[in-house]
Length: 383
Image (tube, rainbow, N blue to C red; front, side, top):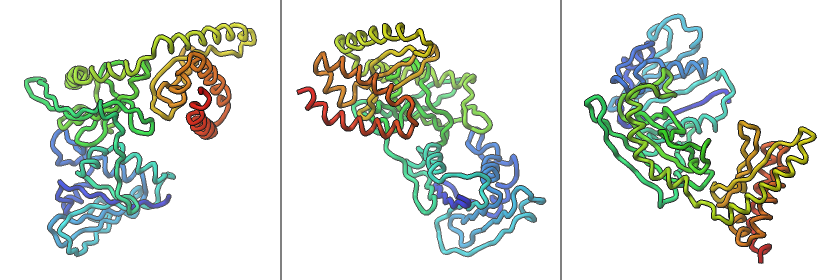
């Protein structure tokens, strides 16, 4: 893709006048309030320059009959400032609504349109879903998919805390998500509607220690000054204000964390069936290790939504863990009998060995077809 057209409409702004456009091109200048996104006066033009060598900015102020088109023909080799180096073309309009649009040309890299759209959705999700901003990319309005919460676990919250004699408010939502195609994997943190961090568990157990908590998804909205890195992609987690937020959120989500960890804990019979298989696999590993090619493999049980047969993990100690998904229809049917539990575990072991040397694409296709077939035929097999 050589050119990209992006249209952005923001309801709460007056849009840029000719004076505002000139200030936009002044490095380090910003009239944003302290702590606001955009306070450094560098991000917008730096991003445009990173993407392309040439771009246009078209701005129509609200309740004005005139707009302005700024043409930047060679950003890398600009010799002078806004007034002399760029072509500014006024135009007349009958619209009362204001807008700002960007059109960029001669992209420096090969960007995929789907990648750009996905990045915008993830970065500005709250602003898009609450219709505070509208992105139109290649004539299509961007919309974010709804989070597939397990409704009985879904919760919105608004909580306050005091730090340094000042009251702060935190708002957001969270819940457990079974659907692996949905957003999941901890909290995303948004400051003034822009994502500044993700995969946050606020001091609780994370998926590296207990896989089940990966099912938690949440969004935390912060509308006050929080120390960030210069590129606004990380929170300063050494700040005292962040410590106060972590402490407050730790208490807010401790019940949902317990529910995620204890979600459908395996029965004693299920655990015993897996332990028996593990003993046999361990014994087999010892026999075959003489060739120095056998890697330790063990089984575990987890809950990972209805579509995944198993989750394969490689531990730092070199051990491989096959986490059998108890949420899959096939497991539910096979585990109705004692033999079914044992044979299902053995089958998952054989399956992981089968796909080990396949490409990612081949694995996904093979496992998807196998999963559908197994789920539909399991009832017949167990009769």
